[in-house]
Amino acid sequence: MHSTATQHNPMWLPHVITIDGPAGAGKSTLGELLARRIGYLYFDTGVMYRALTLQALRDGYNLHDAAALEQLAHAIRIDVVPPTVDDDRQYTVLVNGNDVTWELRSPEVDRHVSLVSSYPGVRAELIRRQREIGLRGQVVMVGRDIGTRVMPDAPLKIYLQASLEARARRRLHDQQRQGLAPTLEQVQAEVARRDALDQHVMAPASDALVLSSDNITPENEVDWILAQVQRDTTP
Image (cartoon, rainbow, N blue to C red; front, side, top):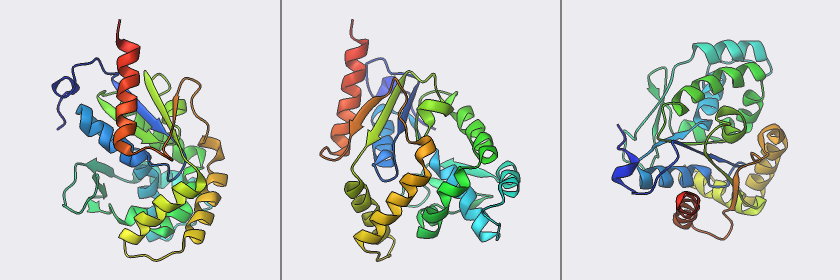
């Protein structure tokens, strides 16, 4: 249960805020901080694609079989709830009732999630589920095409961008926290490969506010966004 925004901030706030951007730009950190600051639900929509990818890998699916993956997308149960374990997670993700939160960030899922999410049938089903959550309001939605396709009528859209090197360093830190030991060059090559696969969802919405995370802290990113809201809503 999340509290109302007016309890945290007196200014008028849009009912939906979308945050899009490339892999490793810091969207999840920004989205979670912003949602906490204003009392909104934080919804990282990418976990749905990651959850589907993880389940497909575990079940031995052919990841080039779009029809089979679309059927799995309709059948799988994916729940996102507040953190259930005090291990620095931003949320808990349940797939068919099982906690898979950290498994979603494994290198194997990283390598295959762009392929799985590229199939139109898969995207259509998961976007439908994402939109249902967005339409409830008081939500910060983070992903790749939230402002352009999932919630095109959202009143506030942010596009967070960052250099390839900065995104690779952020992803390297995430993997080191999981006990993995790739090199920066390996991670940078993987991020570049994902950029190439994700070109179909990389463009910002025409009415999005573009923000670079290279030389600004997540806390200052939140301040900047709320300053834009206050500017736009002050008579």
